[in-house]
Length: 262
Image (tube, rainbow, N blue to C red; front, side):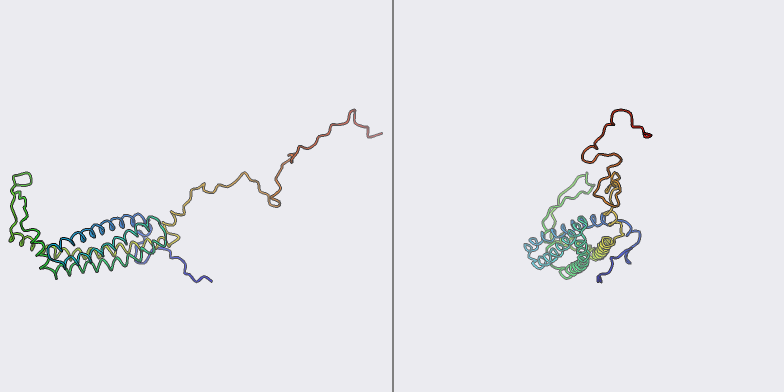
């Protein structure tokens, strides 16, 4: 006896009926592709800063960059798996992506909190590296607009320190706002992944309906064949139809027909 429960049907409890009635596959493809690209670029940025952190004498920031880069690598792989799952429309891959989206929420929240903690606990190292990189740089100043006359000044240590502190203060609240946005987006992506997974499971959903749709003439009926209920192996020859060889013909005898009265 098969005790397996039937596949679900209808919109999920956490979703909206109007959204569920539409095909979520194009949306999953677009969202996973953009998320994979963004996480990949973020990963490259963190790994590129490792050598700079070490050369500026702040190896602790280099270690933090390695950790955050690894987190974004995993997030990028999760989104790539989601793109492949939606592209192939294979149920096992869609199921894996749905569960991996929960892992993505955890990594996004953990990575965002870790980045905020590093920002506030490593303030001295961040300002030290920023001041060292900015000091002595030449900047172009346009007092009358971009198309007006300009002059070039060299940034001093005091100017570099003031500029880095202003940038640090701006990034303090930007990191917190970014964390909230990342949490909202990761939860939304996970809901989208589970909604698409439910569509693939539901035999009455628009996804399976479009995949199972066939053209009207996919299976043409053979109207030329006649119905033979009893012996289908014997062909229907019709009236006076020859079978193998033509029927023999006999010529009438010569003369008039005999008189039946004699």
